[in-house]
Amino acid sequence: MPPLDSFARALIVDDHPLFCDALALTLRGIAGVVEVDAAHSLGAALDRLETPPRPELVLLDLDLPDVEGLDGLIRLRTTHPEIPVLVVSSMAEPRLIRAGLAAGAAGFVPKHAGRESFRAALEALGRGETWLPEGVADEADDGAAEAVGRLAQLTRQQAKILELLCQGRLNKQIAFELSIAETTVKAHVTAIMRKLGVQSRTQAVLIAQQARFAHFVPEG
Image (cartoon, rainbow, N blue to C red; front, top):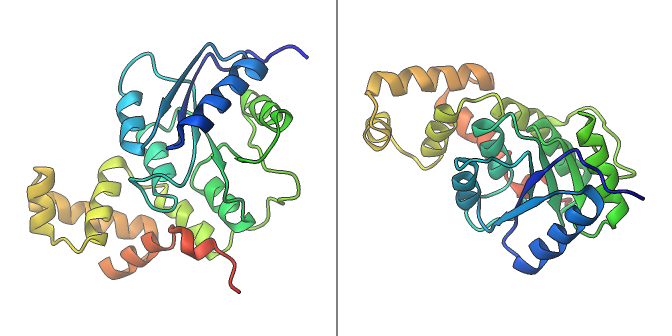
């Protein structure tokens, strides 16, 4: 079966070098990807994405050392919405997968999947379609997926401010850290609450906390 040619450059974001190497070989073999880079943290990935030529596809592990939950996916989609993100994760709970799609992922492939699953996923992405693992229905969003979808609507600056709100920072402290006026912070906080459909800063923080992994782990 001949390789695909939809994506010439890809970036793998995963903190396990051996898995990065294996996935890079797979991409070159089944998808004809010419250039495959690896980043072992979200920060390194964001830095790489600022350096041309930018990759045409990002393959993202959700469990990274410098992010929690779906934060990494949301930040990637906020900063580079033009680049499709294929989540490649060992965590394949259906609710997490649906929340990932709500956050803007182009698809989801479990780490244990075979080469043909990766090939099918890249074929779908190349056609502009999304990809779900076999057996995972694209069901209606639950509350957490809806929350993640709302978070994905925030701008890059608003996402930064919400993260600082989650850390308990006051408007004055946020203004100092981001080198902006306190009135600008207040305007952003108002916009954040409007996009999230909440009435207070505390409710906005609670929405952000719903994007953490613990919410998607089955009980029992």
